[in-house]
Amino acid sequence: MCMTSIVIAGAGYGGVMAGRKFEKAMQPFTLINKHSYHQFITWLHEAAGGRHRIDDYKVELSEVFRQSIVTQIKDEVTFIDRQQRKVIGKKGEYPYDYAMIALGSAPEFFGIKGLAEYSLQLRSIETARQIRTHIEQQFTAYREDQDETHLRIVVGGAGLTGIEFVGELMDWLPDLCDRLGIPNNRFEVQNIEAAPAILPALSENLQTKAKKILEEKGVRIRTNTKITKVEADAVYLESGEVVHAKTIVWTGGVRANPVLKNSGFTCDGRGRAKVNAYLQSIDDERVFVIGDCASFESAGRPLPPTAQLATQMGDVAATNLLALSKGEQMVHFQPKILGTLASLGRDVGVGFIAGMQTSGTPAGIAKELSKVKYLWQLGGLRMVTRNRRSLVREY
Ligand SMILES: Cc1cc2nc3c(=O)[nH]c(=O)nc-3n(C[C@H](O)[C@H](O)[C@H](O)COP(=O)(O)OP(=O)(O)OC[C@H]3O[C@@H](n4cnc5c(N)ncnc54)[C@H](O)[C@@H]3O)c2cc1C
Image 1 (cartoon, helix red, strand yellow):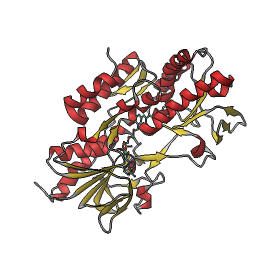
Image 2 (cartoon, helix red, strand yellow):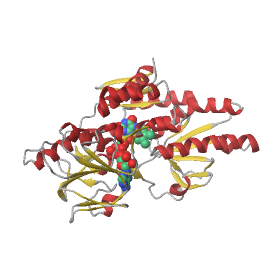
Image 3 (cartoon, helix red, strand yellow):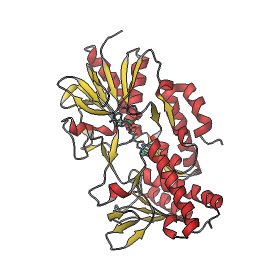
Image 4 (tube, protein in one colour):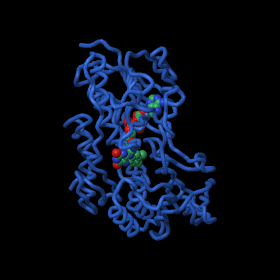
């Protein structure tokens, strides 16, 4: 067994896949994460949108990894000291021979005034809980003063996160209204997007289908619409219109975790550390950077920040790190977009898998099955059995 000291910073999609690879190779490693758990971030729209219990969208890291292989540390990383080869956290310093940085992303506000202060963001178990509680409180407050702005929800951004969230809301809010005795036709959900189309990762045909499904559910989709300013209960548009709403959720963009830029890595315009074909930082061959933190160019453009690519990067970077530590040949990272699926509520979706387009109920079923696939990758049958009942719809 190799006694190389390896530190993974971040236990999201990239970090846990790298950890799984080390575990299979019987290579001990240290895993530093802000929380003691791994979050199912790609399903958080369900948590915020009232589908299941919020705590079902996480799994303790102690259930993911064998404790004889991993040294698990709950700490918040603040700096990567490449000179001293240490990951620095708020509670301690963690020396490494090789490091894997997988700290995910932070919201991108594009300099829009008031957006950071007054919007909610769907990024973690805690923010999902905050959004769900906030909406429930606003709907409850409506019963007191009949102020319609309590029932208006603005979601900025029409990428996967924003679209999946508005789809989920349209299935949850009628139930919430029934529970609180509010007439079902009173609430309003607006999705506001500066670009001309929703879901940029999908073809025009699928974008059109998604828009139609959401509009039939009652979402007001507003593309080509720029937000210029946000206040506590108002969204200002470039046209001069002001949308008054007491719930404003921003999903319009992400940039890499600021730790990379603050630690002096060479970054792209979104703060992602530039990596080579082996997923090593171009500044330091001993530091691998993966997932939303990495700027990997494919066909002249950085890859988009997705869980699908983060897991692939985690797997390849771990293979390369082990190869490098043994003086063996590393492999080039070759991204594979196997498919993209967007849920549009609990039962339906749109997307493509292996080049084939799908929409409606079949896409909704495919999206549910993709959860089983991820749980399998994370921890085989044990993880599927543990989570299937609470997270995956029965057909
Ligand atoms: C609602 C929603 C839906 C999405 N749907 C999809 C989808 O359908 N398909 C898809 O491919 N992608 C989707 N995405 C995007 C996807 O979730 C991200 O691209 C993916 O999580 C990136 O993986 P990562 O490993 O780079 O980072 P993350 O999974 O974000 O993991 C980062 C980890 O680092 C930890 N961390 C952060 N800062 C620190 C710190 N300073 N110190 C210690 N630990 C820290 C975090 O707690 C987390 O555990 C969605 C995102 C959202 C929000």
